[in-house]
Length: 498
Ligand code: HEM
Image 1 (spheres, rainbow, N blue to C red):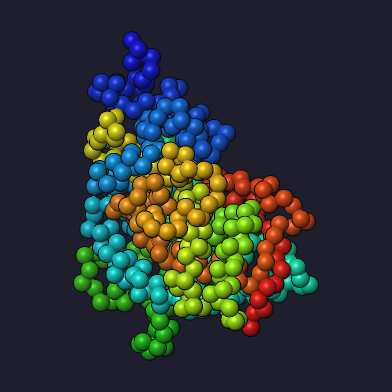
Image 2: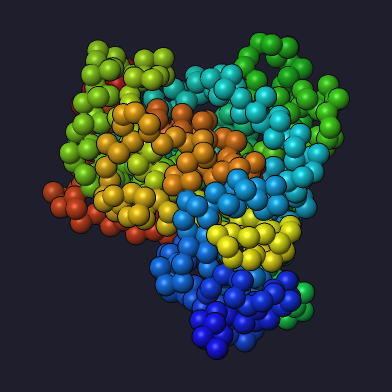
């Protein structure tokens, strides 16, 4: 009787759960008819609401979101079981309807089925070609030029001190960097492409009725508008990418081989021509991969940089220490070159990690789907369950991070520091296991040079002498946990640009 009172009835949580002894299922709130536990997520951002549920029910919580059985894990041990012990079984993404349309039915990297030869080949290409350390290094001139451009754009305002919308500038910077690395610097449809990709990201964010109630005709009818919008954006993106590919092919013929560094589309087109891969690189696959690079790369790196600047503005002592490190290392220079800072800014690196701990851009990582029944910390998780790892909650938990809510980069200094490799399940900004982010090194390189440039060239403070501690740190709803309000700071030039 006690078990019945404390545990949800299995049959209430979805078909896969119905044959199980109810005490084996993870605990969770009682689902309501039809909507299940959707009401538990109302009024708060999903990762916040899920943390509140974890505090009440434990590190493994069972929910029913609409018709979809869902498990949320919120501790390093539970995350290890998902991403290491059961990695092979929990590495598919649930293919939501909008994502299905935008990814050509899972032909890109982020939504392709994980066991498929297609996904394995694309991941191999990421490691060996598209996002390899050599390729990331070859993008160095792009990062340096764009970071210098950012500094000039701040400097262009007059007279000093300038009021700078840091959010806008950083977003523009990351869009430009990712766009140039993906399709080159002379893409005539650049702005159109960015606008369509932004719209696609907006459609991907959030829970869609059709995804929450798969199989329901009513949900299909009510959700028809967003599905139609996704199809339209998808059609426009496809046409733009086709035109970009044609431009590239004719430019490659004009330039002659080897006259410039390859961008990601050049590499894809070369691999397409050469053939011999496990998968055929159709135009659809190229569109999907370019979508991954831009969608997964631009927003995450911009969000991380903006949160890092926010935390620095909120914590002037940390700002001073990071600035003095950057200024000591770059003394006498008129612009930031990566060769000058590489491996020489350990405190700034710690600032970036601390920003990623408190503000992982993808707070719930990306959802996974359980292909077979598994056990997480002794709880039975039925086949077909969607699994979320709440990296945001784990990164803010006092059990693993003393003074968890404080911005203390020092915790990432010294021996035995936690790294980005996904091996330490307390710190999962790039996820873990076989689905772990393949672009994290590239992303962090973009964040590092942007921050080094802003800190080297300018002093920063809140406008109107506002109290740094009172800076609004609210998050907006969306595919990434970005700032709710734009970050606007006062910049005073410190080192002039050349
Ligand atoms: C600070 C920057 C970044 C962060 C915090 C980040 C974070 C993440 C996370 C949490 C995932 C899901 C991993 C999982 O399911 O375990 C992911 C996947 C992915 N990321 Fe990143 N990312 C960043 C930058 C980038 C960049 C620059 C690129 C490419 C240019 C990229 C490409 C991808 C791709 C393709 C996937 C899907 C991988 C798959 O499903 O196999 N990311 N990223």
